[in-house]
Length: 367
Image (tube, rainbow, N blue to C red):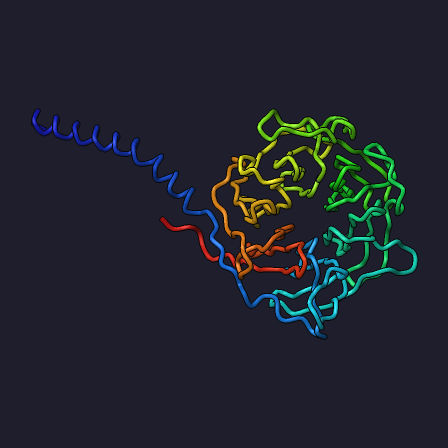
């Protein structure tokens, strides 16, 4: 090869190497951005309720192994003239049809004064909590509404170190591998903790507060400056709990606009603030994961928006929804959400004339 041709080849190889160094990171970044989920509201879901039924504030929503969507609502909050309050627990199939309804006072258990949370575990048990003044217990039923277990007694809370009762518990999640039920406990100014019970017997296992430390109810009641350092206590609404596929426990500290993440033994890992700078009086109402757990979604009832966060970075990468009365908007109180196995997101609004909406996963975002 001639010296001239050798020089030209060397220059070409150098230029190619430089080009690869410049474009590969950008291409990777573009690919990462392009996989952010995009959703479209399905205004035809669910189907109209039978029997002239209407729902009140939807305070809890869950998905079961069949991709059926369960809600619990406050029937006493139905305000539409001429409408009949639906039973508090409603199961919908994937098409939005009502499968069954049940709930209310019965023999052998104390129904909540004011219902709040619902979850369906891998054993098809339906767990229910309440946030009324006397709701210091949680309940478990079969999927058809047969009573199984009550943990705690109505009206018997003893503060954040009471190991027998809860206080206005918000959500429950069950780890069937260890037969443990994790409870976010609670709402308002009674408990500020996560507590874990045996899901078969109701026996107390352990509890912890913010940063995995011992909760202090008096300190948690002190005012917190939103612009100041993060509170060392959970606020007045420990509002959700979820367990990811890696066994990490995510806790919604609604009033402090943050998620705290723990190991199952309560060891603190990290915290993530969501829209803290927005000025809303609390943003993190609920969360759930995409089926591949690449993302998680946060229901922000302060700003009426669902935030999309990349799980490995705990970073906001998108959002959907806005304040308003129309389909795809949230009127006054986006409160809870759940995700089915296809990646669709379902939301509940805990306001008068509450509603459920489905947001269908359409595609990854395009450039």
